[in-house]
Image 1 (cartoon, one colour):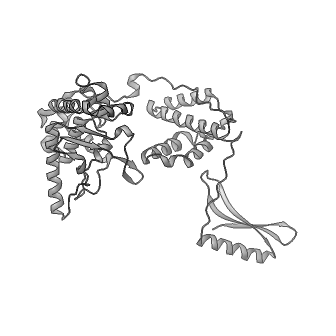
Image 2: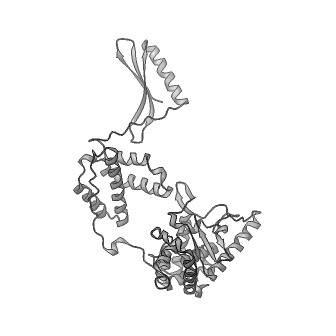
Length: 390
């Protein structure tokens, strides 16, 4: 641990400084003490302070944010991070941290908010596009800049401006945006047909089938437990999601209140889930484990205590897609688009949105009695589209 001393007054008053680390902005921080005595005595006291710091490290003092002419975009992002990011999901926090570190912190983040103009913001966003960044990434950067500057304006009592608010994104064509398309029924059927031939693990095969048959999100299917599967009423309950977090994945609450729902499944998909259960029970029995109600349906751990990692399921799907010869622009999330498209002419928009867990139709929960039969009709319709591959 480093330290220093300097004479500050007369011949016997010393300032002792001990290095304690760097704050979140990378600035060096010290603890300081004033000592009266000879130089040798001051050196002994400095050595003692360093030893204490080594054994009982003091917290690194943070310099309070001063909202004014010198406040930078990075200052605003850091303040937002320390006063708001804890409420976000692990995946969202990780995305924010990555976007800030890669695209904001080393460049526009160093700019003082008071001197930042809308022109400079738009020029920076266009620079990102010209470097090859996609629409979604640049839009995410702008959203972060806007939120940080808006909070800086609020926390400064209206002293600081928000030049991002009036800025516009560069234009991308529909092809440049790389939007997810709904795969054709023949593509989905080919995926399921090849999966049924045994080229992938049965859990992966049925996982893909369930996403196509219900429109569930990837994380929602990963979080599905056996207690959520209602065989008597041919439905599954969706009330959790597995999200990617630092060092792994974790189970969390739903994306929105509307994401909590009960979704009907067709008879063939229900039979496929029973097939997975048989496989999981055999695996648990061999390993002297018990498959309880809280076990995760698609777990690869005997007993099902750990859910599958969403990224692992995506990688397995990528291998399946290659073996099936399906276009590379079809992803796991594309199956959700397939499901939504397949229901366009079958059920009402209200019920389709309720089935898929979109937050804009919470009022659909007030029509439960009328919706149940319609939802079952939706499940059977998609089941018939897929029945040739079972």
